[in-house]
Image (tube, rainbow, N blue to C red; front, side, top):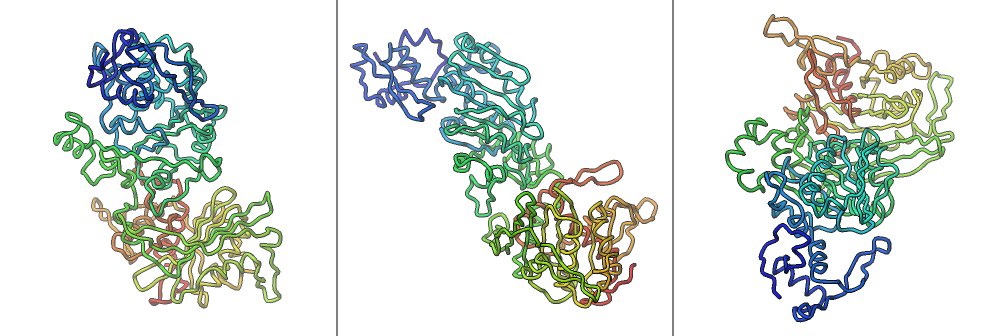
Length: 633
């Protein structure tokens, strides 16, 4: 009795009774694992079967194998690199007799028993591996359960169809699927009592509720799930011992859970903890993903060649385009249609010693004020500066009395604990400063930026974020910053004129405690979607080449153009604040019929920057390098 095969070939169950169908090297390892010999096999003696108990999470022994066919089948089922080509058939083969092949770079992935994260190019075999891995577990794990999730049902349909095709191709597999439930979501149930659930993430991950799996949990097209609930519900469905596997083409956005998890798996110094993991169970928090990065360059001919490379260069508009980096190289790059490309933005990220960032969250349910403040530094350089936040304050204060103040006989106000916190945390900077604010209410955060003006150069020196605050409390924040950074009422302020911004502007101009500050001369509000003449940084109109008249542009476009111009000319400096870097490099736009339409995701810091920029170019006229007049243009 000897093994004669060098490579695995398609196998029928009946063939296992006739001779050894496992490749020689693999069968020798299987014998060694069981401490068994060829002589014992010749005497038709077989070792005890080993199996993994999902409940106890331990390996146990069963009765001895009943024969050579069962011993070989166990060997094939133990290794997906053997089971897949033995029992699955190549869907592109017209006769469906060729083995389902996995490329070399896929074998190391599918054989990895622990959590994996695949950040890869497009069409390099991710779906193919999901199909193979899912079916392998479905047919080989007793009483197991698995989950395959994706942003939309259409992403799942391709996987479901490919799995059902394999049952048509192999009559040994088909009888094991005893139930295929289709509504409201697909579910396979096997004769071994394995349950395989398919769930679309939807907008809030609700479809994951009620699912609890202990064998594996796969998320395909993971970068497209950009809401925390889509991830927290997915992780909640994972029981201890369950293996999560994430697959996606990166899309360049740095504010997604997939990006954060990928950076954690890379061991990056600037990696942020996943938001979804922060509230997850202890087991989920302890998960460490092994990163796999597959580019099209790993694929064999004819899938990759010089001709294919030129095709993709022409298709995506160059090797440096975001689409080429995402779909061909599997790299983060920039988002498609990014406004602030990282290759430009990284040159204006500088270590600013006086920069401080303060975040204040009101937890009314527990009567708490959650305070977190930090400075930022450059931890190193990779493809640009590596950001690191250094904590300065991280505390919880009582809400009662925190915002209370008294009006003074002179028409001013006493400092509340809130105002004292702001004034005590930030660092005064001499010279001309300018403020920009994007005001929110309820779930929308308020973002306030302070810039220091040094001749023609600007630098961000302070950032204040507020959540769950009232209009009155936002007024207090602006006024406290004005006290700190204003010299003789010279600082100017710009704000958006949304609902919250309009209310704050009205209160600062109208309430008696702020009247002496003369905000009506120094605070200007802007409707971002209103149109105006396009002007340069000197206030001169930019003429349309078609009719020599000033071109029309929205205020949001005008501000953004001036901001991108400063980035390109490097006349602006931003701190290495991870929030700022993520917000700007992930900001995108598309072209509408008349104007550009900017993404509304995570744009609050950028809108505060826009408000400050508009205050500079539209609101007020500088009289010298270090003073600001109050005359409107």
